[in-house]
Image: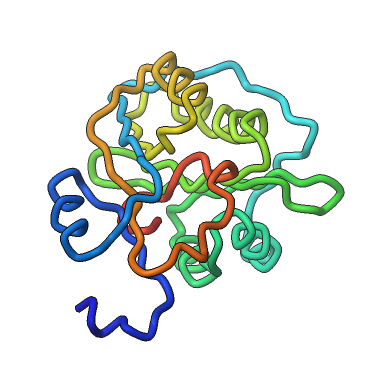
Length: 195
């Protein structure tokens, strides 16, 4: 399969600890660690205010959000975001400053948990404002999130909200990491199946 992707400048994936060993042998390198956290009973936080306005993220905002996301993620995920928005069960919000996107969040129901992510924002404060606005509507529900492990302050806050670490993933790349984006603006991924 990897041979079929020879024309790609960079190949990325999220590997489990067992998969990481296999991918290392194939030449993949580590980019960063991701922790999967779950709660069966989400503790609702106080809503944290942002200097920006929380708005529903609809198809009409897709182009702006895709441009914003590309700066943070490093590649155009427009098709993935459109696919998620086309699903009626997906809930999505964004922070705006005079019509300019300053962050966004998506959530989608699963069989056992609601998956929250991706969350992309320019600051931890904005990410927490997005998360608190969503979490307050999900009090008592089972939720799963995938958090960048380098963000210790966010991990501690999640544990205060009744989340526990279930397992880890490693974001890996093959060839070059020329599309790293800005990981400091990526607070939650959408799941290892989405990035």
